[in-house]
View 1 (cartoon, rainbow, N blue to C red):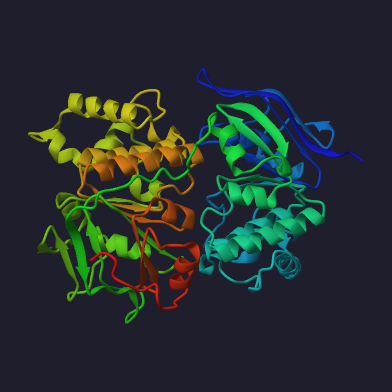
View 2 (tube, rainbow, N blue to C red):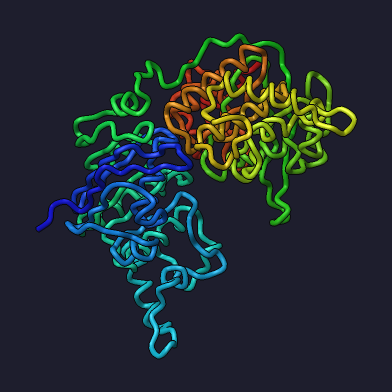
Amino acid sequence: MEKCMLKMEHITKRFHGVTALDDVSFEVEKGEIHALVGENGAGKSTLMKILSGVYPDGSYEGRLILGGEEQHFRGTKDAELAGIAIIYQELNLVKSMNICENIFLGNELRKKRVIQWNEQYKIAADLMRTVKLQESPKTMVSSLGVGKQQLVEIAKALNKKAKLIILDEPTASLTEIEVGILMGILKELKRDGTTCIYISHKLNEVIQIADSVTVLRDGQTIVTKGISEVNEEKLISYMVGRELVQLFPHQAHTRREKILETHRWTVMNTKQPGKKLVDDVNISVYRGEILGIAGLMGAGRTEFALSLFGMLKADEKSELWLNGQKVQIRSPEQAIRMGIGYVSEDRKQYGLILSHDVKRNMSLASLKRLTHLWTINQNLEITQAQQYVKDLNIKVRDVDQCTETLSGGNQQKVILAKWMLAKPEVLILDEPTRGVDVGAKYEIYQIMNELVSKGVAIIMISSELPEILGMSDRIYVMHEGTINGELTRENATQEKILYCASGERGEYVGSSAE
């Protein structure tokens, strides 16, 4: 029996003269979970697009061997017929269809051109039991959370008789409970002989789930190891080419005067009358500190941030004070004018205009300052963009490069440059390192430290407890729209944060700011 499921030998791929993959060789054994890791821009996505037929035979150099036979995919359909399924971070489901319709989309069971619905629903129900989905096959996908949509994608792959499933950042938007469910399903699929390629920036998950791991760096294969031969620190050094002495480079910050505070801050849910998204939140924020906001998904953290930035309307009894003055913010434009910046957790939808170039994305929040007589000072725009590209180590050809072509980490640094150019007094960072590799994370943390040293107040929302603990000077914990605990850097632990996040109250509720 062929032990090796997949071999990709001496793969080289170029885009307009730029080498994205340089003689990459990659091997996966049958029935194993093989992790593929590397910084953004290392070549992981390009390699998987070759494997899944997005880049057809002839557009790259090298050999692709599956189950002992060399393959020449002309497109994604050829890859599917060969037993390869890829599940992207941005799920490929039709929200207006039900679960069964999505599972069979493009592969409907027909007799004389008539879809066999009863048979499809029966098969869909069996597949859903396999992936631990308890809903009806007729449930609309739009009503499912991201975690359950991920399971629908896996069921869809199994329906196509996939022998090799590629999962690209599968847990980026999942809760800890959903991550646990997914891990259990992948282990069951492994026991049934399905091979998985697992791409993730979350190295603790890689250590937990994978049998082996391959590291890519700058389009080249650095190493392939059994998972027992590595730890997180070793993987990081392979990925970035150097050892990061401390993953969270927190610096001693000098807290200055109070800059922002809320009183009785409440935000109503306009879609569900009577329901509160944010309920009576009272916080204080100081210049020169990183204030962490922790909580479980759905706790109201993002809604609170959006309301401070004028994207959601606060209740009329709510009060916002900036620099000792009571203010009202009814739009993002007002927020920017008053010195508040906001980096969204969804950088592609709310942080960037992907079709625009780097310099224009950087200048978006500062156009008034760069404009004279309705004309943008392009020389100043270019000069300042070039300076931030240099200061933040953004990997671009030049500032005219389309932002869509950048890696996730570099896109995130473009957003940070946008706000540094706008010179905010308060900068809200919502999941600032989501989908970003460890090397770029480290650089983003350094940027945060630099901003704080200049007197900027940073409000950081994060679902990653190590990040909250590693970078925050002070932490508020939210539960169901309220502040349910406040912790100092000195007494904060994961256990205490989870205690407050789950709704418990007690010794961890305090007022350390005053």
